[in-house]
Length: 251
Image (cartoon, rainbow, N blue to C red; front, side, top):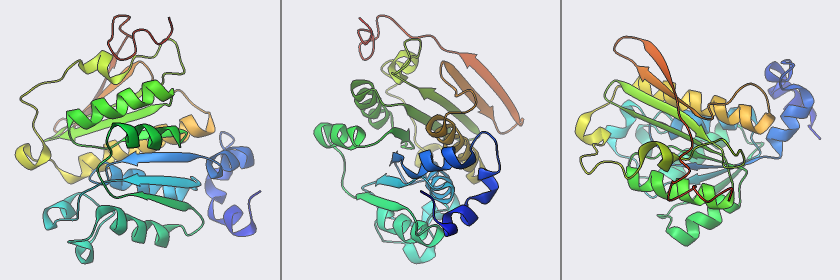
């Protein structure tokens, strides 16, 4: 049940017919893994904590650097040098003491990632490198857990939802294959802060839709964001029957 403080705290979203008391209870009972607590993971963690997701599992092996603060809004100047997980826990606890926060402070290998994914209902990939995204995708496909994936660099962003519970859903590998050896990171190519905030906020929204069960998630669709021209474009993405990660999923 929701206590009086929770009813008051979440009253504005409980007013929505798409959420209501039942939806808020589903959020309270949900467990979510956030991989990466940087530019994308910051708004994701803040909004899901504020929305009342009952258990947030926070995974990041990095520490806070001064260069992070231009866009990673869950951290502050006093957090420089701290573990990003510990910095985020401090901020999220202040935002909402009603939720549980589970820390993963070290890099997740194949076994620990599989265990972390199996322990939750939904995963948000907020990492900044292809190898991590591929590993997270494979773990989600194996555990049949929905994955909300976002990316942003320079003035461009992308967002999609991969849900292995749905026969028609592609996975991350269906879309991107083996990636590119020339992949750039934000530290090399740069990124504007509000763009990662926008993509991360949309990731949080997709997560709430999946957890509560309302709206139309971005399954089979890739949202492309052009921040320079303030334009949004959507591409349809089909599952690859020959995909080496999910191709035999429904055989």
